[in-house]
Image (tube, rainbow, N blue to C red; front, top):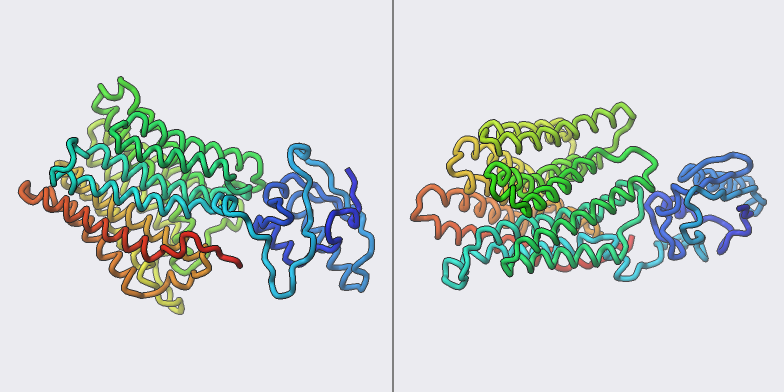
Length: 492
């Protein structure tokens, strides 16, 4: 297939912003560049290159021609078919170059836009489901429920709330980290439908059906990410993404184990399934997302390996952390509760300390309230793991330091960072205002109140209700604070 430069549809001159469009996977002429760049083999004036380098060669030659005063000279450009060329529609150049004032790519429709940024739906829905999950306890103690809400509460908070934030973040960042096309509207519809069905099934006391919906949701996301990495990724996948995907595998495995009669009949297998689902789903993604995003929150940049050796070391550290965490689940399920929790805490702490610079350096800007909240979340999360090792008889109560103060607070902080960044108001994340301060206070009080419910039996009911009210207040505050950002586009 040969096509001269002037034979390309649309304007024969590539605009300057097109180069940024190649790397940022903008959509020109209704076609996403990121879906095609890995398939291109371009020959420009006899020089052959593939993918992004080929496009850069094309742009460099045109720029050289324009500088010499011959922008309209004929370039010998060949677009050679890749191994899967015929499976994709023909690429289109923009019908006209962007203006000098910085015109952006054509505006996506609502469906395609939400599919490219699924966190907008999932973060909001997850927050709503968390309110439903914690409200079960006051309703139960008030005599409004006829069933004990232990299992529905746990499933809603982990699968429907925590799972929503995992799917929302990985569904948005995963394709970008893999240099692949964003989610399609069909994928978004299936994922959100399974997520909603998961919550409804658990509310209707149908745990098996709810677990299968959860497995379908995570399986669909995992399959989509793996397919994109295999088909489109030209460079090694970031280790942080592999660590985050370990959480998806743990969540799927734990939910599937609960469907087996043999697991139900085995105490150690039942405990292992619970650890894989309740902690394995969230802890590896927290580490992976943290190693990727926390440096940026703390004033640095998104972590990128600057050499193959650095990437290899990062991959080994991520693999070691994932292996140790899974090994700690087996240790605890076999009765070694204290060694299991200490190993888990040590592996998580070592990975985060090795991958992230937490110290505030001189000359850096003051850190905002939510940035400081990372320290609270890390402290409460690690404290919850250690507290279970110290007070194993109060395991369920102590674990809520990890679930509420660690996972819950981190999801709200990371969700805030994503919402600020994708609504064109990134500077707002670093503010020191009353809303983020009150948010941190409510979550910390909710975590400590729920953990202290095990101190005396006579305060258990009141502390369950207080903790539920405090968490509900925090989520309502967070949702109201970001209400206008959930569906605000960043036009730049």
